[in-house]
Length: 129
Image (cartoon, rainbow, N blue to C red):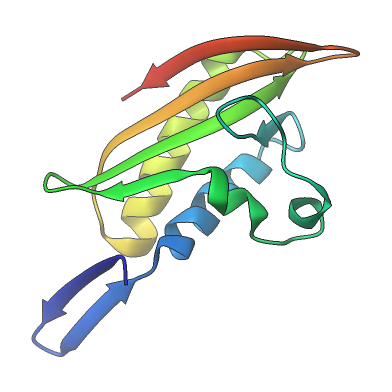
């Protein structure tokens, strides 16, 4: 169990995979222009492409004392604005986590590990709020 809170009606618990699924759905809103990667820039294999939960293992989701801390490693397709994509992704993640779980996201960090075109260009750009 990742997060548990007691209410007058009983307990509410949220698993880490629920938060991961919210993040994956937000990344899917970019229609393939953004892909989740590991910290080295490698995109997960075929399992994640057919709807598996392989991407969640690359997300860093920690429940701290001040709230939820999230780190997402991504690669962006060439031609997409890094600033625009990262800001939209951070806003979307924060809003959806708050809306669907009522848990406050203390910090969301998006790290761009690379740019994909015909070749792969490594980057290490972190945007955090």
